[in-house]
Amino acid sequence: MALTLSHAKSPETTITHGQDALVREFITDATLVAGETVALDYSTAATTGEDQVREVIRGDASGATIGVALEATDGTAGATVRVLVGGYVEGVDASGAIAAGDSVLAAANGQVIVYTAAAVDAPLGVALDAAAGGVVTLYWFPTMI
Image 1: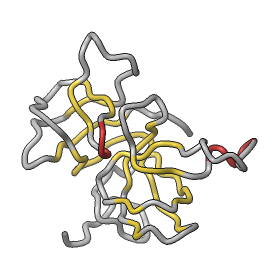
Image 2: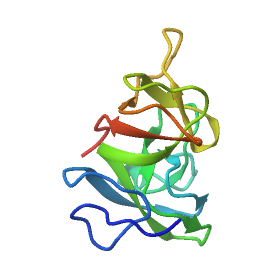
Image 3: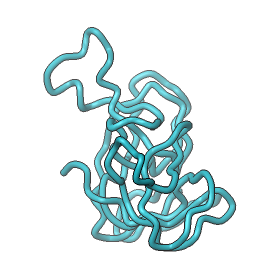
Image 4: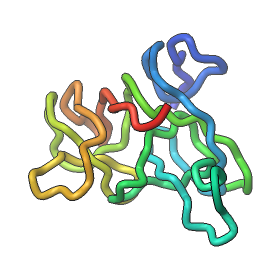
């Protein structure tokens, strides 16, 4: 995938997001793909206090999912990754049929799926178009500032 201007963000990222998007930098030891959801990795036994919210892993079907990776990482220990935690974002990994206007929530493997009444976790955003080719454009509800 070619680099795409990230609307008023510098340096460029591979995922397009809005100029008013909330973007934060986190630490990760995980291999991430741009467009995957990420979750807080607060499970490390040695991690306490504020350090519990500094590291992320690939998102899954849990309430710890906070945003979308704007760039890929290769699994290098202590690497940094920029994460969109609120606002307009294109190219989010999706699973299943998602239509414009559908609310979405986190699923396995860093993907989002359609929110249903049976969901335990809160919706993370709303689809702005129908998913195509395994990706969707979202307005991601701000999860942290």
